[in-house]
Length: 403
Image (cartoon, rainbow, N blue to C red; front, side, top):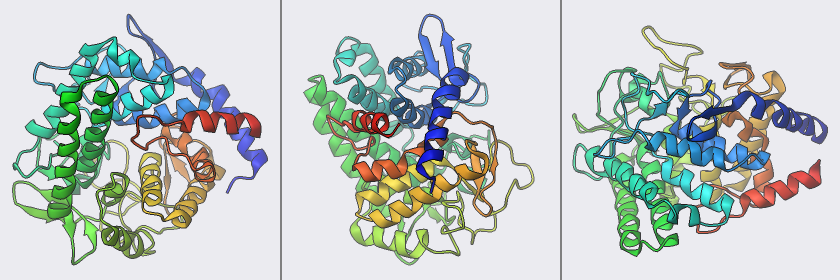
């Protein structure tokens, strides 16, 4: 755990380096935030937006990024997962935007004190609906109430081909435990946005779809024998028995029942042979054949194997809090903060040695490691899906007093 003086030093570094290294401009949309040289990725934007909020950066960065993604939406609702700073869509990223746009819009509403910005731009709301309905309807290939990742790169976990197929190959068979948990949260966020702007006809519908997806997650993705949420192979109609950090996403979505949560935490998260490594939480369980520091033949992209990443640590942290595992959440928060001792802000870290790799310094979601323990102490969670969430305001006040 970082001592207070070193924490202050790192926070000052974030304030000084991150904005200068990560703000881009696209005409006529405006300024936006990107840790990937001006490229906007959907799930990065959500977690990055939390860091930006705590750093006091303008909320317009989040709105601009969302507008840029949705400006490329097709008539059927398909929206790109990533858009370059020059406005072009990377040709390999034809897959649909990761399901974080509604959550990002709700987070933005929390920051600006309501959804009046959305009332003034109903076309933005309608685009959000079309994007979400594409996930819920078009990507439910089996008709079981669960949607599929197109391939492993679409998950954001670039080289975990055991889950969803090789990077860049349209496989469309993996009903991801993470994907469908994200979609539960997206439906609940969309219902809140609809309620906030008076679109009452949409509120009950999205709430119902969220609960139906929770039921589908418990029916199809839970494995009672192993006490684990697995992805499901939609074509072969079988579980994909790969123990991956995505198994804990249902905790974040409150999609697990209390007994399922207990088994996930006790049998897997706290298991040294699986996820409770010296530095945690690795993308893959240490018991998996693919748990390697690096790549297997033919892989590309960033490595999601024996490595720790901030977004997954963060949503597991919040998931633990959802079910009352505060001590386990504190342990994870302090262990995550310890990673900054080694290489400060890196894109990802070895789960065995704590050494950082990828982009350095990384000015995106890794900054979340600075705030997890403080969120626990303050009792705030910016990812809670409520009409009003003052996590940002409370954290900013706390940081001002701490500096």
